[in-house]
Length: 194
Image 1 (tube, rainbow, N blue to C red):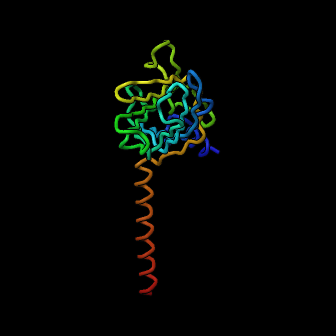
Image 2: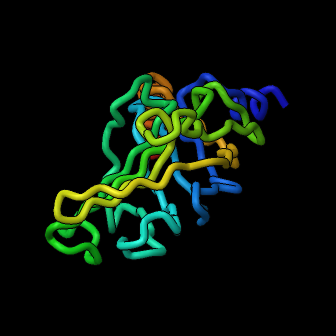
Image 3: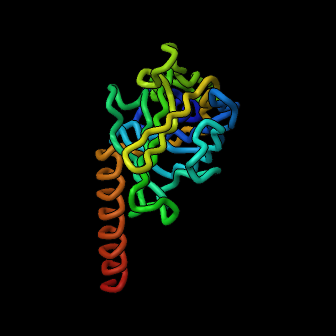
């Protein structure tokens, strides 16, 4: 029981598996998906987020941000455990034209590594009409012209927390295996000599 509780508690070195629920855009449209947050490197991986905002009329919709279509980049805010940003272009997406770019910015109202399994944090929404700079949003740029769809609701839920072994734990396990192997060889050698 103690080991299970330790594995599921927040603020430890771990991979946080999260899902987006009830993601909505101003003007209509939805967002769903999953992603993983690494609390050691403060990076995101395994993201698969589909957006379909009505406000981005010229953008290819629905669009899925994933490692095969976009890059996870450091968001322009800190700390990183409260922001996720993906950027897509013709070089990464295979869908966008050479003059098109697309960016997804998600901001959370709590640090992801402060959450436990089953906990939720809200997506930060745009509180300044006419500007999406301070809230979660999806942006499409074509020929230098930018369209932005602000996120107006949604939350992120922790589905699973996978602990990451500490380097000393890995070293200790490796050393124990090495000693065990050496001892077994010596024991086998001693039995042969008798």
